Length: 118
Image (cartoon, rainbow, N blue to C red):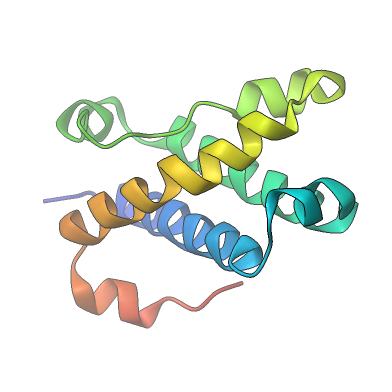
């Protein structure tokens, strides 16, 4: 059973992953590169994912070690001038669908439904 605090962080990760996927759902790589606002939106969601992951208890992190969390937060925050858009794009396209699928298996369905996108 997940602690309420960890449950909320996992929901934050799930919501942010779904939002990032939604943001790029109608975009191509070339349109992503040209749209700074879209880049900012996706990068912000990756920041939230990384920060929520950082706040998870060690116990939860260990128990969910097979879930492919994304460890980009520190790089995005502290090395903002070195962000590689190709890595951001690939993360959203390849890693986030797997992350969403994994979290949807772990989180109670009623919790997922009760959360709204912020």
